[in-house]
Length: 289
Image 1: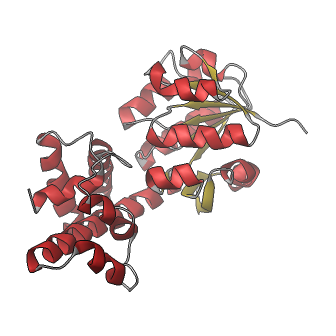
Image 2: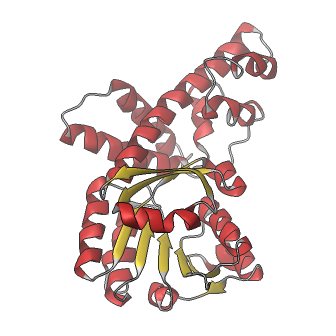
């Protein structure tokens, strides 16, 4: 049975690892990203490079997108040079960008009007999850489409859950980011406390990550914090975007989440100080120099 042809738009830190898994699974993958150099290692592995969105999606059965900001998603999907202006009926679009639930609904409605199909499928797990093929994928859209795409999503995901209709995947990702925000504050404060109290931070992590306090932020990013390794598994600039979306949704829902507000303000300050290209673990800078 011939496998579906895939177009993948956006080959950043996580997207490039996902494409590698698809290539390893013998899928034919065409890639496009704004910075061609980011895609060159994938081309060396067998992906096909194209110079624009229209060319990238021309022969695709399934189009994955994993880009930066909601404005980028709007441009890639809704502009004259975008997917919907150059796509065809029966194509499937899967947006893995963390974006607003309302935009996911807009994309789904536009896809349906063109006899195309849409799934919003943001992910969690960072660079490590993408590299290991163990991402958590939160899906919103038609259940039949989710069922159809599950074998492909399983190539690079481990926990793949159908959340509901269009936009539900994005709502689930907001829950994820709210939790991560609180965990990052807790992890950084624990490490700062360990350092100031005279504990060895690595030894402290051995105990704490084995108990009820463990989290991805502590077990996976904690060692990076101790080593002063601020390379991005997930960029501060993108996390601020996510937390802003979550706060916009809380306003719409008339819901007060002070922990989320605190985390957004802390990360916004880091962004203003030039840490946007660092990983979220750079939050430790709010506690120690």
